[in-house]
Image 1: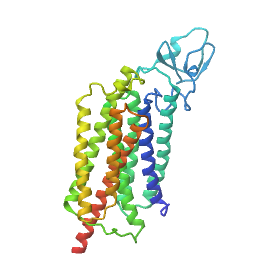
Image 2: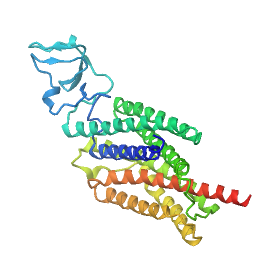
Image 3: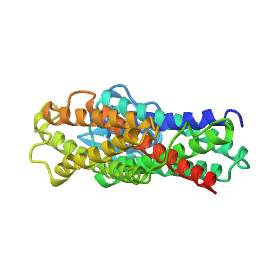
Image 4: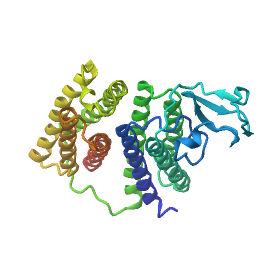
Length: 352
């Protein structure tokens, strides 16, 4: 386990990014309420594949907790039962957590796959905390970071349930996203420490420290966090417009947008300037940070997908790319800051 621990950390990072991708696809397709309950889906461990399975029928057996739709209302079976020729309301309770009562097999299975990805990530995190315990003597920060990331994953699971129970409340979705980014930061920090601990031959790859570059890095990380959080709010506005005008009328998605949209769009200018400043300093001072090039590419990708979503009526796939690129961008900026910080400490130790 000790020798495999770096791979487990990397697998944990990949699993969280897969959750981001799955979540982006859920938002892109409007499948967030594909399963009205959590952790089951319409009371099933394996979701229904047709509306007939969740429609009340006479002379049919239902297990406790199964959810049906009758007269555009969700009902939950109070116990195992077999229906008669008439609907008996005493055997059923109205589902009161929300009033979303639509079944769409594509949305249901999209949301279910999203949940499966999260479950698989949960197993990876179990290996992570076990490995962190085994390697606790290498660096005391290893178990602290791993356990914190694990507990935040549990918090994310609870938030996921809350998102469903509250019918996609915007504030909860934003917190859900920000906590996910914090988990990414913790795992990247852990990966940074583990890489040093398990590879004694690793050097600093001739990185050079620059105070202004480091400050711009910190600003870039904060700006990305703000921009992604604001982006979730903009997306919620789009979702509300889709509900109002229908998915087929995507040209109305950004009709009369709120201040949040204009802030999100204009704030991109500040983000571009900060990161281009980093790119310029890296080239001018020959600092040696290759991650800067990837950061500039991702910002370009973010800008292009953002423009396409606004002017081309949100082409299929652009939202998922936009969200995932933003999450990767945040991760690279944070990891680059760790590299810069280590370079400073290395130069300080040499100077002393």
